[in-house]
Image (tube, rainbow, N blue to C red):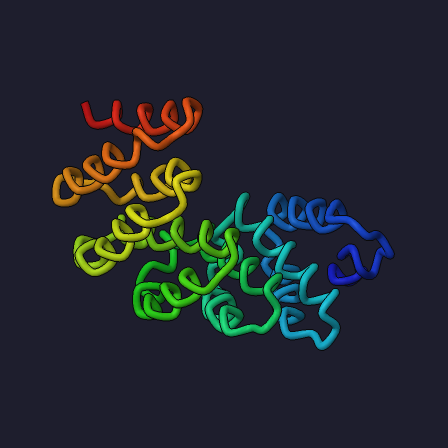
Length: 207
């Protein structure tokens, strides 16, 4: 059976379980040909099919990112999509392969930043995680991306600060440590106890 026939749409199932099961199957078998078949249908005219395929791919990326890394350019192109499901799905996929595709992603940093700035909460989460991991790979990347990441942390909704701080900490080093910790300290008084607890945990990493 074609692996495509195992996606939720072709199984006639209206939830994500078949897609998650297929991703686990592809990852455990290191099935590069199966991944290729799924990737080819990211551009399917049937939006149900393309939506299922991006789900399968980013779920595969969680387990075996090397299998979907060759499709980084496809995920980048999907950031232009008018379908929000494909945009945030592509950004999640990129977040799973960022260390493996850092050079390509750095080259497209303006597009990533635009997608984050205009995107949904899920797109923003995936995008910040992606950029932070890219920045962690090379000091040149960090120098370029740090201003955006720090400004995002400084201006995002207070409820989102802990989550984004947990993403951005991946690229914090001696060069941006002071700025990072200063932003967290400035925003800390406005947080709920549970939010503050997460920030305190991050701060303790630098003591």
